[in-house]
Amino acid sequence: MMRLSPFTYLAPRTLAEAADLLAEHGRQTPTMVVAGGTDLFPNMKRRQQEPKVVIGLRGVPELRGISTDRDGWTLIGATTTLAQAARDPHLGQQYPALAHAAHAVSTPHLRTTGTLGGNLCLDTRCNYYDQSYHWRKSVDFCMKRPESNPAAICWVAPGSPRCWAVSSSDCAPVAVALRARFRLVSAAGERIVEAGDFFRDDGIEYLARRPDEILAQILLPPTDRSWRTVYLKLRRRGSFDFPILGVAASVKRGNSTVEDARLVLGAVGSAPVDATELAQSLIGAEPTTEAVDAVAAQAYRGARPLDNTDLNYAWRKKMARVYVRRALADAARLDLHHDSGQVGAALL
Amino acid sequence: MPRMILACTVNDEPVEALIQPYQTLLDVLRDTIGLTGTKEGCGTGDCGACTVHLDGQPVCSCLVLAMQARGRAVRTIEGLAEGDALHPLQDAFVRFGAAQCGFCIPGVLMSAAALLAENPSPTEEEIRYGIAGNLCRCTGYTKMVDAISEVAGAAGGKA
Ligand SMILES: Cc1cc2nc3c(=O)[nH]c(=O)nc-3n(C[C@H](O)[C@H](O)[C@H](O)COP(=O)(O)OP(=O)(O)OC[C@H]3O[C@@H](n4cnc5c(N)ncnc54)[C@H](O)[C@@H]3O)c2cc1C
Ligand code: FES
Ligand code: FES
Image (cartoon, rainbow over all chains, first blue to last red; front, top):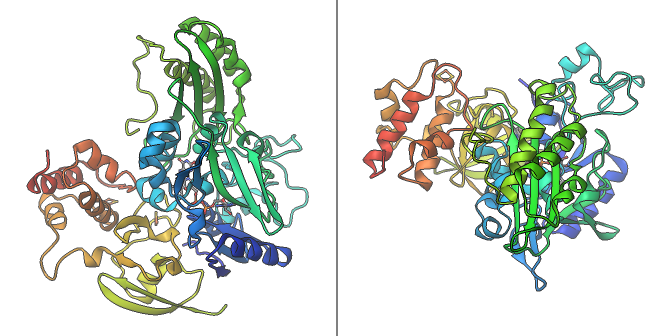
């Protein structure tokens, strides 16, 4: 059985203390923060990540809870659990797509532990990386975790200079579509980054977060009923499984025409893919099936899933078209009568 | 590595144990406290065999550090029955023949118990959803769902 290798565990009580500990230990030793541990601990058991100091964030009250500020922004503490986010009445009413994405993650037990912040900082995933130490050793280590092999390659695209591990967070594409911002806190100060700038298209350096920074809050801009955001998730089983495709679509409608539209694809690259430019062709007209189909066809051409997650990648590419079409139509309140097939999983 | 003192309750009994900070709750329950009813299937969150309640919430004990249970209430499969009287869910699982090899059953029972505590009259879909974090490699879940439905029905549920 796989066990965690030894580490020192620190449990700060304030955000400032957590940031100081991260800066201080991070200078000398591999140090990581942990929130729910539902990503980090499996990775540590498989020796994909091996911090010697682990800083637990769950005892920091400032990092919990959901509130609103004077300007109508919604502020979500990073260690709010996915279960809390999924059933929060305010999120359910104002940002149902985010609540739905949180609800679509993993399993009921993991959502009582896993957090929204941890979901947004989720390590990228790949069939050649998410394996035990012995498995990886036997095929030879890949470049995301090369161990002592300086010439380690990417097993998915051996000729490529980069790592193609996949951003597999359900909430990340929704956060980008909602134009969320993230508050990052370190011992040196704090800054706010746009969700779209937080994720980097690189399987190894997948976040713009510095190693000494803690994601403290997720800030959601005010919204109103003219906007509708939808998240659709594709996976093999209706539970447990990570997305192999996620589509977040947002459409703002005036009386009859589309006033604004956004489209973000998850689990097709090392970062959420912002395809908003394509969706903007809907602006200024009444939404029609043909217009939505045209966006879906373009998004399909742009989606380039690789053979490094579950199920056949050519089929996943085809499904990008189907899911973009359904998500955009739903967000635009457009009825696709004939498309009555089951969307996503039965349990969602 | 300096050991730490874990003080919590397990099945309503106060427990103190000297443990390593990197031990999981599952390891401490099984190896230190000797409660081996909770099973380890995968160790990575993929099966639910290790499900216990932490302050009433179902969690995968293979992914929770034991130290995270400090000051909290842990309930395991050993604490589901009251004395010699089986919990109604355990009784129903026996009568319905819900178990085959039985390895997943402690986890399924803990999930079902957490579900009924929160929602005493779940629909069949809600029951299936409540145990959606538990893998069973032997059965087709049908008898488990029937057994849970019966208990929910007896408690005034719709089943
Ligand atoms: C069986 C299984 C199925 C899963 N299915 C899904 C799924 O369908 N969809 C999905 O999106 N995820 C899935 N997950 C992954 C994971 O459970 C979730 O993404 C969860 O939300 C991670 O949150 P956490 O708090 O447990 O993260 P942790 O494990 O605590 O942390 C994850 C990473 O983020 C960093 N981190 C955490 N919090 C912060 C912070 N505040 N600031 C800076 N860095 C931070 C950690 O250092 C670590 O690198 C699954 C996991 C398992 C084991
Ligand atoms: S042993 Fe914990 S989920 Fe499988
Ligand atoms: S009865 Fe054997 S795994 Fe469920």
